[in-house]
Length: 305
Image (cartoon, rainbow, N blue to C red):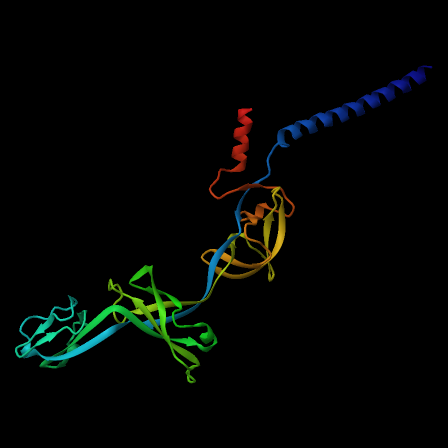
């Protein structure tokens, strides 16, 4: 009898220990669930797929040439008054007074002086004056044969000049040759640009970007693309804020945007930044760029409670 009572006591104690462990684990689990269960999904910056203008570009260089130039060979002894170099003259004004005649401006322009050396002297008794109209600039370039079918008269051109590194000038293709040069396998083209403010000096080296195949395509931030080998992916976000890894076909990169050829539609929401924080089928807290961190917002809500 005593032995049976002892065994029963041991069994009861054993079950009490088990019950205590189960209750303890449940209480600890509820504690952590209560403490961490309300933590929101991570705040991730998202954006919408937009339509954007993309264009292909042919890069080249050329030398600035004024639209009109007139040269004068003048005997030094004939000059009455000093020549006013780099001064603007209107058509019909006197640009040089000589003993026997006056030189009249044939068009609006500036008397140019290439340097201040004796090279300007044609001889010891004469000088060479260049009267130039640089209000319009031309430059000739050679376009590689492979791009010849795309370059047309009127094609837009972006022009940069080292004297104004942060400024971009606009020009157009003014004319295109009718045949390929067989010696260098290129197509000659002439670029024209307005230079009425005379920013660009004749003889300047110009950096040219000739645009072609201008089209409207879907564009997304270049920070939203994941490359795996030759395949490109983005995280597309559903209306329920669930991420879906989506393969896309991409085109060119331009101004921080990547052209999307297929795989997305205009207006789709995708992850724009923070790809390392995201994984497929994850729930996120979508944020626009510049918004407050989601965890900060959660803490504020918790404090209000």
